[in-house]
Length: 339
Image (cartoon, rainbow, N blue to C red; front, top):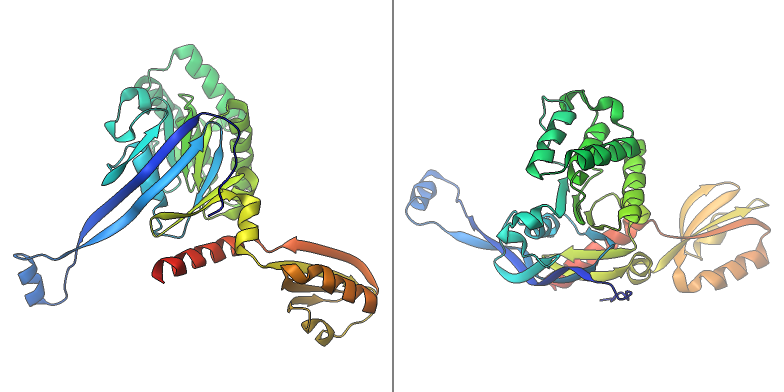
């Protein structure tokens, strides 16, 4: 596991051997088995989170990644106090989340891309007013914060429109506004850009980046959209089978889980594709360009050989797509658990 190096800052999230397991009823097929199950049930234990150790410093923007069922959302629910752990300890800003203290509730926010916190048939403005009373926000502070958020997200003209009439991207902007009205110090984001188009995703990314830098809040983000991660996070934590498999920098994950580079050559003269097969996998041929996947350690030698035998107008050397690197990390983590 690659361990990151940080400046001396205050730890705002601390998890030690945090675990959550569930007993799940095993229903058998057939009428007789169903009747038997009324008197003698069989259960199996599911380890949703199996001993997570994690420290997050104040002001960090951390990507919390993993395949479906890895334990990401369960961890966020534990951190927000929605559920209690089976064992282990956790402190967020000095609070134990599942004690559900009002002081803690006023200092964090949770946004889940697949769940709404706004009243569906009412204008978002009405839900915002309700949040003001729940969090006991001073009227002048509430209005100033609302004006700032709606201006940054460009939704001022939509406040009086029923939430059900808004687009998915507009609804997510409203959800973020509601979550940030009480100026939390910690924000948990679970798939905030799920289902959004490219423009809406970009707008949300730009807002989160600006807001986090200006307020220095701590954000833990789960997402299957790797452009969110690349645009926002320097640190990546990968969880699989309920345990942390990687904790380090975004650049470090490429080094650890990718052995290839993508090389694009623009060749001045005509070429035979067969000449390039010996260098690596030919991904794409669109003359005068050819794109190859080559071993990272052989890039320099391959380029020297190509330049010796061909007239090259342009060369581009890139890392493999982040989506592929993360998928490979998930795969290796799963193989490690089953071996």
